Length: 134
Image 1: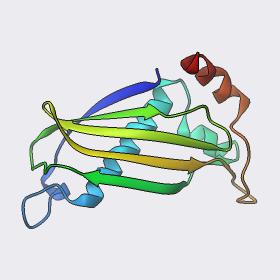
Image 2 (image 1 turned 30 degrees about the horizontal axis):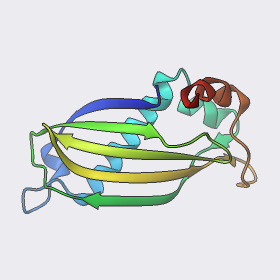
Image 3 (image 1 turned 90 degrees about the vertical axis):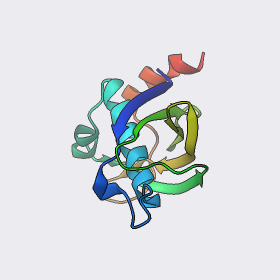
């Protein structure tokens, strides 16, 4: 499950004065898809944090290609770009019907919660994702 998709219905509070989905809302959509991807793999994001590993975003790239509007039904696709090391790289595509409206990439760093220093991807996650790259 290198790729995973979720559906999002645009809420009114996610639009701006021009009636478009606010640019910052797409970043929240990325996060929702990413957390769903992790959960669908069988991991709990909150349990990972409780075990001492956090995953802050260290890099974000977004391309806004077409507008989306209140009440649109969007599909957010998230894909793990490469085998995790001390970071996770995800690519995103958001579609409204068959039109791509936004693409993006995030890089998340595995950090020790106490020291805030980089750590390697946990073995239990590596075991699950290794088969995705064969």
